[in-house]
Length: 82
Image 1 (cartoon, rainbow, N blue to C red):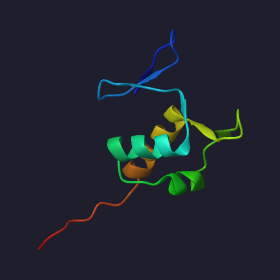
Image 2: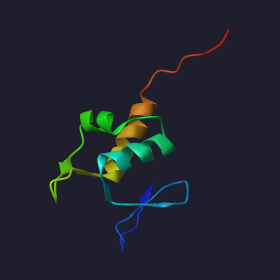
Image 3: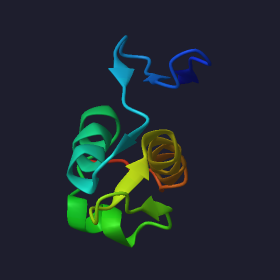
């Protein structure tokens, strides 16, 4: 994930441009697409800074995706099957 200094957008490895800020539902959708299934309600419990410009919470997408990547990296791996 990289950031363009000119546009302040986040570029993901998938080749797309992500918004700088997004609501919880959008962040949950991005995390689900890029890392693991999650709901907006779960995103609410994560230790992220929420801003309220128009009474609706928006989160920094980069911060949320970095937290999701860290969460996935720290999760235990288990062999499945027999």
